[in-house]
Amino acid sequence: MARPRSFDREHVLHAAERQFRASGYNGTSVDDISAATGLGRGSLYAAFDGKRGVLVQAMAAYFVRLGQIAPAMLAGPDEGALERLHAYVLRAVHGVPLADDVPPAPDRAASACFAGKMALEIGAAGPQQISSRRR
Image (cartoon, rainbow, N blue to C red; front, side, top):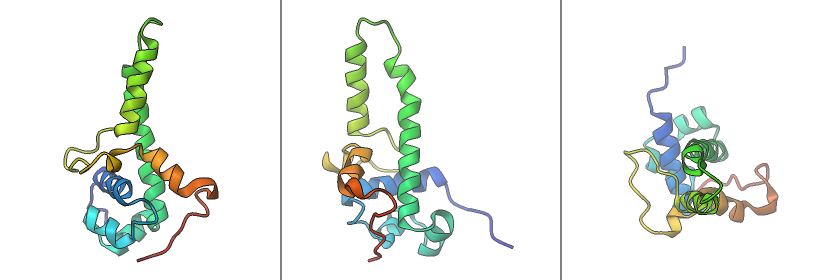
């Protein structure tokens, strides 16, 4: 019988997101994710099916957080809509807040838009082709 999960999935995904932001996808190893999240390699593979799975789920969580802040940030009259949209985009670019127990990024490069940063690195290859190398 398998043991029940004993980790906070949200914390793990936030910590992994921070690691990917800081080092990029190809610059992040499973060992880096393990160190950032506190989960062992075996637990990461069991829960997320490896580095690619962690990235996909961390990005999904990122988009959920973006969606959660959108209604409050974008609601209002037509007058001021452009300013609200600008503030929302800046919030997305500079990072949607992570879990309280995940420290902030040490520099602006690490706090850049997660989706944009991963899209630039992964490029046209798409998620099926991204590197799965282990370091």
